[in-house]
Image (tube, rainbow, N blue to C red; front, side):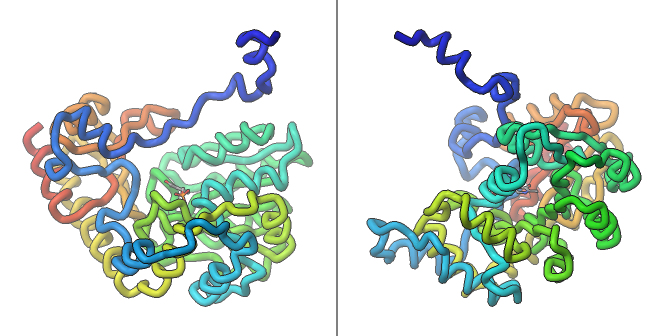
Length: 363
Ligand SMILES: Cc1ncc(COP(=O)(O)O)c(C=O)c1O
């Protein structure tokens, strides 16, 4: 009979050696940690939309009567609606259970064990995490001190085993975006370039128009940030039809569930409302950025997304993070290469911004 140890040893060795991904804690756990009720807390650690989803989504979910049926594996209605929203034909579109799902299937589509994937940290952790799960090898090309991409170093890092490069634009957690020229320079390297536009509704600067011109360009989007449905898991990719067909072939048949389908369709019918919340978040982002410049012990980095990264100077960043946590303000703390002594504030409501500013002044 197998012993538990034997089973441990049967787990792929590359997975055994991998570090687990660190996701954000759920709100109720954070409130419990701080010993404070929800209304006295500000959850500013997940880059979520603090205004929640469209009321149309709430109503449609409450009245949906088809939860007992499997959703359409071809995602026909959703892809049609996304086609109207993006101006791209449905055959260019694949929906996923969040963009995380798409990152995972893109890697499984292109990566054989030992193939290389270029990652430009500091950036979103799922690219290296999913590369590890897929058995690929991450090649790290750090960003420059101002967090811009080091294109020359990317060129040097590319070889015949390089299959993919992931670029978040705007980048999480630094808040800056890549230029069109930088992305085109990378597309000229003959590797597949994944541009992750999770925060594009906040920056207003998309590169999806390039997709029909480049056989190797994939753009990822999500409903988690602007549309306030992070909990329902809804994202999509825009890519050339042959890549889309490959992704459709290997995805889990029912990867976006019925609730997420309903929420996508209703969100897309209520973009005026949702973009109103995006504008409110942008205005709070600009107000918080101004306010943060008042603190000599913080260096805030300009952001075109719905969060602001800060270096903590002269003080201990972890202490700042823990102090805010005690006051019911939950932010992200980083201490990874390139992000030493950094914290990130997701943008909340005006009340959240006031709470952050008051707490920092009081510290
Ligand atoms: C750059 C980036 N891409 C993708 C995601 C994940 O989005 P989703 O919720 O659609 O999986 C995030 C979430 O924080 C992100 O920052």
